[in-house]
Image (tube, rainbow, N blue to C red; front, side, top):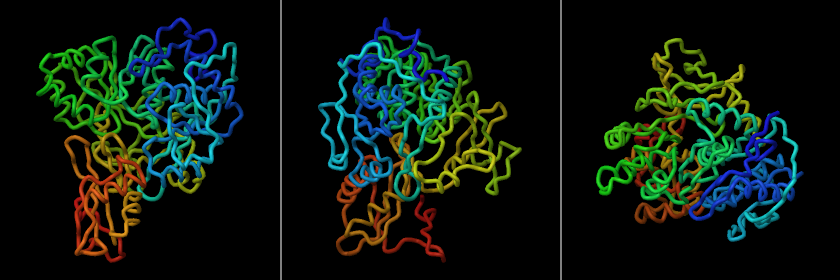
Length: 485
């Protein structure tokens, strides 16, 4: 067994390090993070699971690191999650306590849990924690499927270590790197890659709190070496380069970064080219999922190529298969991506049926993503196997749960949800609604607010289109392709 966060343990403890994490003016050195997380770890040791109110603050970092050190699985909670979804996650994961900053106001769905306030100033020296086994659960991250409520993907310690070490190899990631990002800390991209990645290397992370082009420029120009973002962020950076960067500071900042990395959805070629033309620096992409963590990535010493997510990372087996499961020999043909390796989750919490369905008999995970592979091994993702997963603003959103929320509105008789291209978000959510009263259909804002209240703001429809009836086949299934989905 090896330590998941060696910079906080044993002989490699970096108590002499300057900063581990920075959120605006709030900075934690490695020594401070070590002591604060050790103090909290001692309080939660022996718990079954703990929830973490995952705001973009140092308190979230202390809480997650403490859980990892104590060997207690952490369940990151999105603070903007709607009441129904949050209640489901709490009931499904059954945490014994919720870890939150003292300043946080928690919703009623968490009222039944013991609350432990996280302090970044807490001190506990000389506290040692035995390293859990590599296969023990580290995080339970909830992901939206195409139907039904979110499922909890159980991520073992080995998966986190394997993915981060594969990225160390691919990106030549070292303790000297300073990562800049503004990603939320309740999912894989922002938390595992964006926080645990730097901490595993012994480097540092500067979190912007809220994304802004000015913040990106400021942090990269003051020592940042890497930038992580989603396509929506890079789209806005490209726009600023084109028309608002009069001083040239953003252009200089991006040009001087060692790596610009985009993930969570495909970055449009147009934005690739706009950034490269303005800065001489190309954005590289990688491909991962909650259940698999990182699968592929363009290497730092490789050739960035718009439209590709690079070759498989070290330790990852990747293949394309036909609809009948036959492995494709001609990888220029489109097939479903299946992956196998130490980066995989162990299963969905309390869902053995869904877990069994997700894996093949020989241990490959069925991603549902369709792709081709170039002769040099670069993977090109072309879309989803199904039509019900929408990628908007860096989020993967299941249409089914939005449809269920819409159907709870008294003014909705039938509903279907699709995604359509959006220059800023990647895809925008479109609701196709058959109103209960055709003479008085519910408005776009009314339905958007309704969904945001039940689920989360990023799951609200951006467009509502009223129909007299939804197109269905002879079995009664809605034909989404006829809607443009």
